[in-house]
Image (cartoon, rainbow, N blue to C red; front, side, top):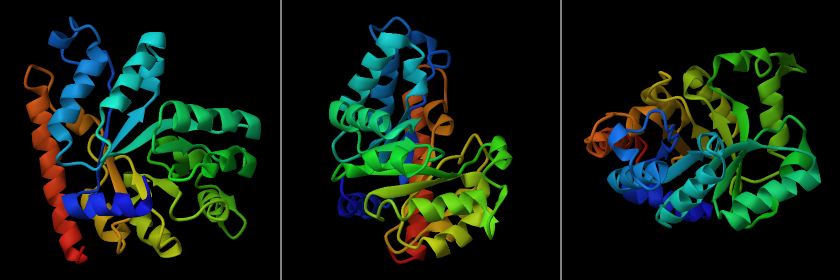
Amino acid sequence: MTRAELIDQILSKQSYLCVGLDSDLEKIPSHLMSAEDPQFEFNKQIIDATKAYCVSYKINTAFYEANGVKGWASLMKTVDYIPDTHFTIADAKRGDIGNTSSQYAKAFFEVMDFDAVTVAPYMGADSVKPFLEYPGKWTIVLGLTSNAGSADFEMLPAGAGLLYEQVLEKAATWGRPDNLMYVIGATRHEMIGKIRSAYPEHFFLVPGVGAQGGSLSGISRSGLNKDAGLLVNVSRAIIFAADKEDFAAAAETAAKQYQQEMAAYLREIGA
């Protein structure tokens, strides 16, 4: 999906919501466990319930890899089921020496046909650039993450600033605002304004809203740009809004609430 197509979806739906399909089999409603593929059946109903209110789906591959071959089959069926109008993200956090990253890129962009993949930049340019070679595909570089352990490295002094700032600055030289995004955690909303000032054109994938306590208001008012420029991911607060037979209806209600709040913030910037 191109940048223009993504922006068009955001503006037409008045939403920058990304639904995270972190579909843990231990949390899926028990009545689905008798289905042929419980994980896919759960995802299918979540997608049907939320697709009108979101522009993107993020699949955390760990919840599928953990189930071996069956999990990969569920993942593939899920990707195929997501409408072409929605931006698909493989949250895989890959990144290795160049020839290995090339194979990761082939897997996620050619075989599974995701629009984007998350990448860990620790090993530097040659571990990231193979992902950036695919036209119409996006590389999402981990920048400032929402987990408590991010302070172990990301917030360390490095040169004239902090390590995460060096990562953002260096990664910006590898790609462009139409093929490179940054992960900026919602629990860092007080810092997003500074990051937006430094990178006015880039999209940010923002996890941590909902169960992790991130502020949608803080992220939106500090991080939106003229093209929206945000994909705010919400996982557990939507997909596990209920754990009984009404789980899909509860997910729809939660997604609609996020979309309506996002529409209000978009109106504030005239989008």
